[in-house]
Length: 91
Image (cartoon, rainbow, N blue to C red; front, side):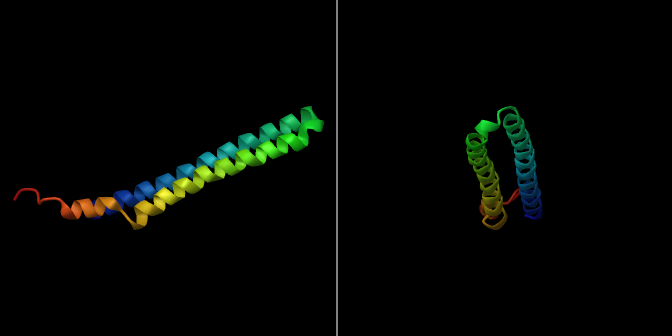
């Protein structure tokens, strides 16, 4: 039972960490491309800014979904109940 809890905690940490890393890299690339596009054509800045904020909201949504799934596994872990209901090995 302890190994299931330990692996769950490890997977939750990896899920949240990789989600944050991916969103950070994505926002960095998005911001750089936005600045590059605005520098090339300043008259399109308002349109590009609107689209950039929409994509930033979608990126944040991906991270929040990952956090929600991680919290589900951390507090309502279905694997522990399956382990408790499993027949004993060797008997």
